[in-house]
Image 1 (cartoon, rainbow, N blue to C red):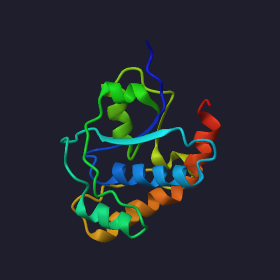
Image 2: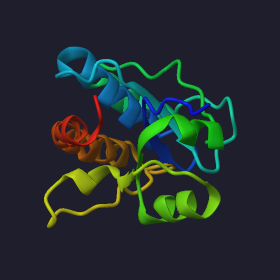
Image 3: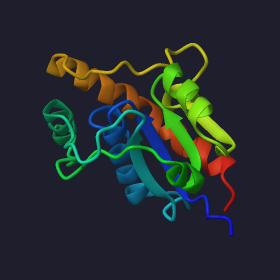
Image 4: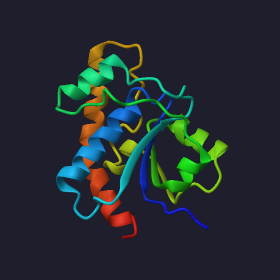
Length: 161
């Protein structure tokens, strides 16, 4: 029996910085103005995650600055079962997409960089802020915030209802 693909999945390396921020941003947006997408689940995972680690302190702080709490987040390693539930997977860098294609079977139709939903001329990768100064976490968050409206439009037009 096929598993329903009902989850928008974000992946990064350790699942303590970028993907938890992206998960919280999209979840909050869909809760406020889902435009028919409220039924979607939103999840985040790491491709090299140690399960159970909290979100990094600076990620939590960067999200608190915009009213979102990721303090309860715990990292999870991406599994084939998670991939099988994903209707779309957004990675942060080209290396994440390459790892997804190398490691997993039966990927969903849409496997993209988070910023692939933006116009062609903007930078695509979201650099890993891990271990960097707080400002890099804010820049990381803001590069995701910029993409969220276009992401919602992408989901509305590309996912079956």
